[in-house]
Length: 80
Image 1 (cartoon, rainbow, N blue to C red):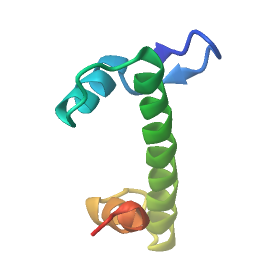
Image 2: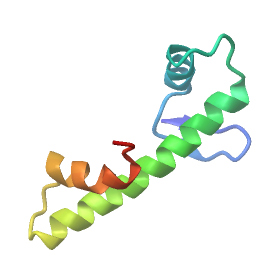
Image 3: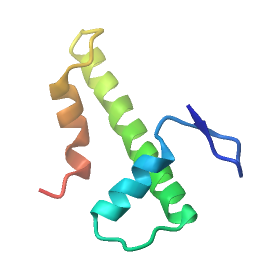
């Protein structure tokens, strides 16, 4: 678990992964702020998807969240 130095908020995702994603997407250079902001946005989206997937599983009477729950919950974030 990582901590944001500015807000001391814990993070589930590593900052180095954000640098790699930005670099793979074509960035020549990546600022610390951009990597941190990407992490914040991705975590916010992931949390929303996870909550919706849990709700879907509960609605179906299951305790286990399945891949289909996550796929359905992530539809609103898909560009396809």
